[in-house]
Structures are given as C-alpha cells and as structure tokens.
Length: 217
Image 1 (cartoon, helix red, strand yellow):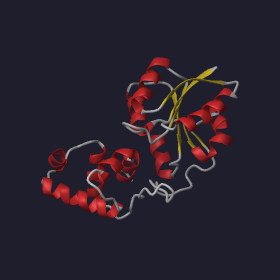
Image 2: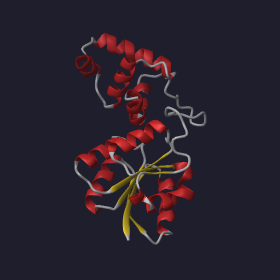
Image 3: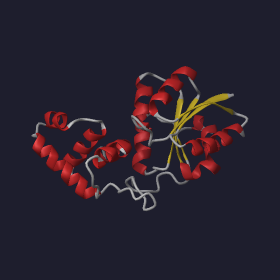
C-alpha cells in the first residue's frame, strides 16, 4: 500500500480525510501533522509516498514546506489540499513541484480519484482554479481580504513582516528609513482595515503564503 501523511492544522478536517484514506484499498495513512515543523519531521521519518498538505499551516506555511522538501530532494508526492484554490495558487504549486491541487470543498468526492491518478500528471479537482486572486477572509470569519490597492512596496513590507523581520531589518534590507517603514505599516493597516498594536503582525504570520503569492503576481 502507498503511505500517506496529512498535514493540516484542523483536527476535524484531518479526521475526515483519515476516513477517506482508511476506506481506500490503495493507501495507508501513517501519520498526521498539525504544523510545519512536525510535518517536515514526519516526512523525514516515514518517507511517505504522498503528503497531503494544507497551505495555511502554523509556523512556515504550506508553500515553504514544499520548498524545504524539494530543496532536500524529497521524492514524496505532494498534493496541496486547501480552501485557497485560485489559479494563482495552483500555478505556484506547479512551479514548486507539487503533484496536484485539491480544493477542500471537493475532498469528499474527488480526493481519492485525484491521488489515484498522480502518474497521469498534475491533478486538479473541479473547484480548483475558478477563483481570481486569493481571498484571505470571509464575512463569516471577519478577517479582511487582501486589497488590490496595496503597492508593491507595501506588499514587500508586509511579506517581510510575515517573515518576522523587525522594522530595523526591513529598513536595512530595503534601503529606507525606519520611519518610512512605519509609514508603510500604517498605510497597510488602514488598507487592510486592521487595528491594534499586534494586528498587522498576527495577520501577516497567519497569511504568509497568500501575501507571498500576491507579491509574486
């Protein structure tokens, strides 16, 4: 049987995927991970055939996990399993060497078919690629979406914040003053409709993959 690891920070979703895998005669779920660090450790430990990977992972984010695995020459198949299924994210997954992209809304009906057919090439489920640029938020969660009017400089600052860079580090890297960085931070807060001293850092860390995708568009 082909071994599988699922990496997703939602235990209930992992449980649903586990049931799908357990019902398959071809695959065996050998482990689960709830964050990026444990995902990388468990892939190294088990050397699975397949990693099912969410994008919105704690710590480094899903695409960073892919980069690290590919840089380490991991041969495991990687299929992104995410609620963020825009064309932009799918293209990033392709470029990083993933083997497929499954929208979470399709998982119950299309996941097993997709992973059974990886030898046929990059697999996508029916809802993948329908959206435009990725939306971070929904009204249900009251998290702000990424506005189209962020400048390239503001996106660069936001991406640096997502990587835990300090104001001084951002200023040195971009060749601008710390005061200018602070101005950009305030403009980003306003455009994202965020408030509070830690709101921007929290937002950036939680959505680092989406921010990186916007910066590279």
